[in-house]
Each structure stands twice: as C-alpha cells, then as structure tokens.
Amino acid sequence: MGAVFLGLIGCAEPSPPLPQHFDTVFVRGQICLPQSVNTDSQTHFPVRFIYQLPECVTMARGSADVRLVRIADNLVLVGTASLESDREQSGCDEALFEDPPRTGSHFVTEDFQLPVPEYDDGSVMFGAVPVFVPYFSVSEGQDVVDRLNHGDEPAEVLSGVVNDPEYDRSVTVTFEGKGEPPLEATDFEDSDCHEMIVPVE
Image (cartoon, rainbow, N blue to C red; front, side, top):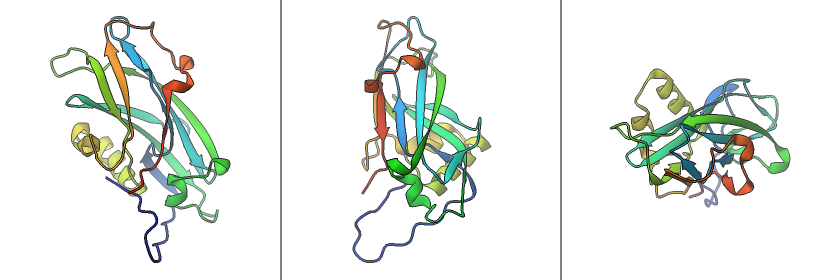
C-alpha cells in the first residue's frame, strides 16, 4: 500500500514529476454508490466516479474502466484510466496529482453499471457489505493496472487493501431482497456520494 508522509522534520524529498503517459487507479475525487441494492429486481447497480484532476493532467477519452472484486465478504472497487500530463507546466508532479487544489482542478465524471456481486456458489451477496476504494501512488497504480491487464488474479492483486488500518476509504452498500426501485446514475443524491482523499500517515 502507498502512503503519503507529511509534516516530516527536515527537508522533504521533492515530488517526482508525472510521466507524460501513464495508467493509474482512481485517487482523488468522489465515488457515488446506492445505499441499498434490491437484489429481487436488480441484476446491476450504478456506480459513478468523479475524478478530480489537476489542470495539467487529462484523461484519454474512453479509457476509464472499473472493476468490482470480491474478497471474502468484502468488495474492492477500482477505477482505472489512461492519463496524460503536460510536463511543460511547472509543478506537474505526483504531489499535485494526489491532492490538487480545488480551484486548480477539473472534474471528469464516469458512470458505470456493475453486476450484483455473487459468492462462489453463485448466490448474490446479501447484507451490509463494505466496499473499499483503494489508494495507490502513481507508480503503484501503474503496477496494479499492468498486473490486472496481464491477467493476474484480481483478488490477489488487491487483497492488501481490505481492512487496511492506515486509512478508511470505504463505503457500505446493503444488498437485500427488497427496497427501493432500481436506481439509475441520474438518481444519485448528495448523500450517495463520498469524498475520497489521499490518506495521510
């Protein structure tokens, strides 16, 4: 797992510049998820990623993707995308990417429909389930994307993010055989959206 170390005594190492082209996982912005999913009437449910990116970084059109991985009784939600940085802009580095100022950011919204997750026996998940949204540094995120694209088992790649004591980037979704009618992405309310920040040790 990556971690950001702030407030250290002495001279901090300068933040490395961003690669010109890189693949990464979702780091900063908002995640929108339904509070409950009606498993009697829904086979899929909506997920929204709102990427907060510094002005010097752009997302390649059509590159955003998402994976929902079950690890035991938990879920891990990973958004991935291909990005490009403007290396001619001063200060376009990893620190800016991980925590861009709101006034110097632009926002990219990506909506997805994900299948209701199942257990190994084919039955749908049931009850209140933690959904973890992992944080990885730029280089770690590239490694995660490379491993997933290579065909490595997603549960093995992502097992370390479940119940990580260093930070809390999780949302609880209740899967039940009742509830509200199926939710569309356009139905998200403010209470369904959660700010995801970079953990600080």
